[in-house]
Image 1 (cartoon, rainbow over the protein chains, first blue to last red):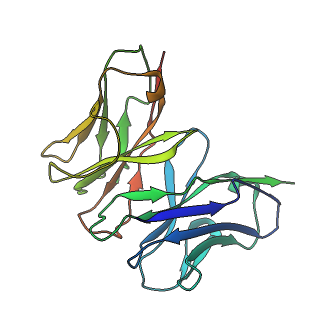
Image 2: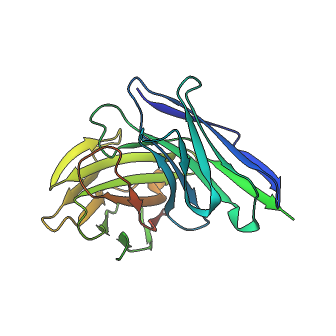
Image 3: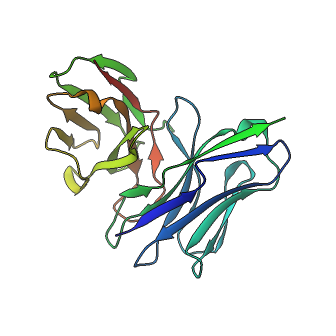
Length: 115
Length: 114
């Protein structure tokens, strides 16, 4: 069965600092991987997705993620944090062959950005 | 292009009642899926519909059900509500049946059971 582990339920950075949110996945087949962001009292917004086209994926708002098969990782980064980046971030994987649109989510990482 | 629309946004129900939540997918999208989000269990998959057929189902009791109409709009129903059903229910849509498609989420319906 596929699964996702997000290391660190809370991450705090200074404005302008590097953001690194960690995600490791478990999958017996080539995965489709996603990062979503959730602002308070809102739904999920897609930041980026990996579908095997390129290992370095660029998303919205300056975020990017690198797929590393050898490390089964898909960490999310942003070179310089902004106050508006404070939110909860979820890594997700499509479940299995024929998983269609069944997303398996990690527990989430809450990002705090302080001045 | 309008996004995924969910109604109602907020509702309060009493234990034992039932509730129906509605979702209108992005125009042209044929796949609709539902998720439950709670502080304790996180985001959990409920079910997915494609062309009016349930294609995937999560590990939830039979009190949770759904359906999809010919225009791709979807509803989910929870019967005999329990306090633990209090959650944010998220609907998501995707263009077709292929894995790897972008999956778009609505703003969610906040259900409180008292």
